Image 1: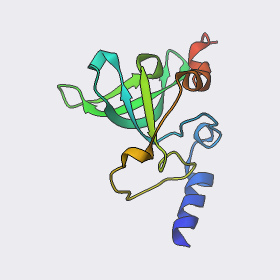
Image 2: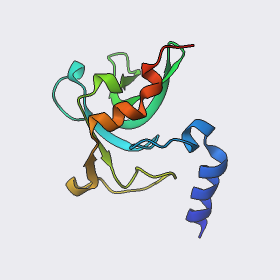
Image 3: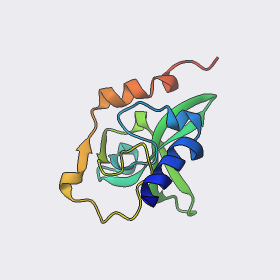
Length: 126
């Protein structure tokens, strides 16, 4: 019961309106793994997120990988050639304390779906 209440509270009170209203194929904060050619061909773990870029809201991934100075790294969707989402974390509520994902937990997200969800980033800033 308390887990349901926590999820409801976070979903209704604790999230910015842009997150609560999100309707794309991947939810903010979901665990993902991506291929970003700028970093090579391997799968990189991270979390789905948004960032403000030149006055536009753009989607991307906050990577677990850090730069040489130890700073967090972010890659925009346009720099990603493959994105898989952990289906267990792709929810409208916060999911905590999960074991490592099995291969069957990863779901590929079609590039076309991601680009459609990121259309606000493609439009010129007003």
